[in-house]
Image (cartoon, rainbow, N blue to C red; front, side):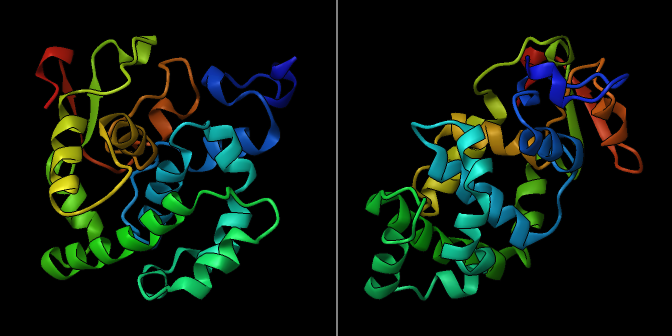
Length: 209
């Protein structure tokens, strides 16, 4: 059973209980307010690579992605050419989607432009929530949407700036991962922990943007 990976006496969000890597990701990273641009790029590009697949596969292949994309160094990735695309395509265990690999390279350039304009990508992204983690009423009870008004707004702006494979559903997942939206279940031991020392605001689901 999946629960064997959760550890005794510790309640967690059910989605992470399938294997040890998912539990570790949930316990240490998911939902923690993120202000490091390299990590933002890693999470965002893993979301882009996930399209049509599942997050568990992304976590299992995470080290392969890091190897392929220079540890998600967006400055290096933005300079990739055909030789790099072929290298990545031939890497054992890699998702062999040329379109997605090209999208990551393209998105690295878009990422750099946002950094030039705002100082950091994190500054840009957190601006949509005014620097606060959002708690939507009902989400902590398990009433989670696939997308919402906020993710629609962010996705639209990212697309306007040229990003690919970042629709509203994908962006919503990123907002959860980087702590802009706290979607840990109320009974999860991380629900309160991820917000310690960070400003947050409660919103009704119908006031979601």
